[in-house]
Length: 213
Image (cartoon, rainbow, N blue to C red):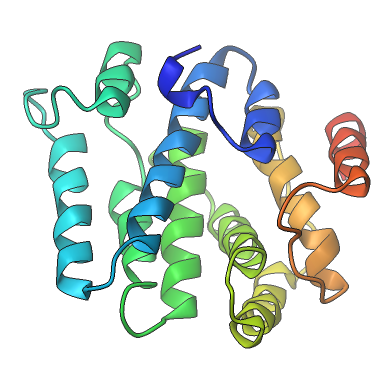
């Protein structure tokens, strides 16, 4: 376990535990997502936020492994061989959609799809996994946004991504399956994500881990 991922929030930490041999990589991907979240939350000028996201893109895609040296999270990802990250461009575009004028669809399909692609560790994934990631991202946003109106709109939009029946999950994507079904339960009931995991969510997480939904 890398020190840079030691302070993960409970949910990503628990989800990573279901990744088996890929747990360390999952923890670093979640730590990177948390870093992007803090970057956006502390940005008051859109142009500055865009420049900061562009720096991360340049550092994480540098094939020579020079840019970003000394940044503990990037160093840890290089040491583990976790780069390049699939879905990075989408992921960053999604976070950028929260800077300035809010674009919920752009955020969902960027952050959610990009994050799930990075966690899956595969370049080509089925469209339904992008939809699952978008739904999860909107659910997560609903639990962190201070504006209840925006949180409600996020849940309403998330419903459009979970329609069309169940998804054909495979064992290799078990952490993503758990994350999706945890979110789906609240989305179907029109509930915002909790600020922190409740006992009911812990129980649901264990149940999904055992039975798949």
